[in-house]
Length: 202
Image (tube, rainbow, N blue to C red):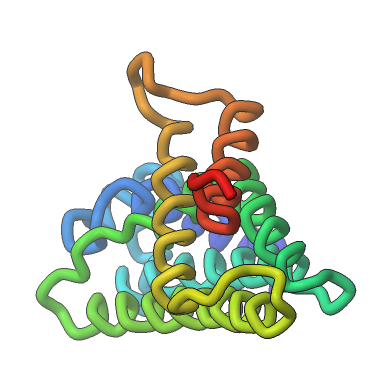
């Protein structure tokens, strides 16, 4: 790809990342994206075919980065319990490095009325479910090894994922409930500890 074309594509992706992280695709216009990127509206159609094509490209990038983080978490050198804590750490690192991507995946907007929007939403949901399946398998292996008590692994994975999302979202609150990066690290571990060990004294 020639440098000028590359710069245009990168500018559109950056602008779209920021805009789509806060609003659904149906609420955004191609004019708004082009204006933020500093390029002509026609560039969106030339490089991505449509606004939906650009949205899909941004979501695909976000999914790829998230997958890279989770691949590191679920490395075979770790025990299943270590994988769960590593997944919590990597999920937070994903947010800290790519906050726009995190918001798009953790708190997606409404898919809208058009088929392309619904297709992207389904693609996103399938990918998130696939990552959660890895957590389910880690929980199953931990139970089989006697490292954690028997629970419904799918429910436990859903609770962990939802807890991490809730904790991490404190990082962008505009009020006194906002938490700093060190606080988020402690809270994500606390959430994982509560699920892994429970609150009841043994």
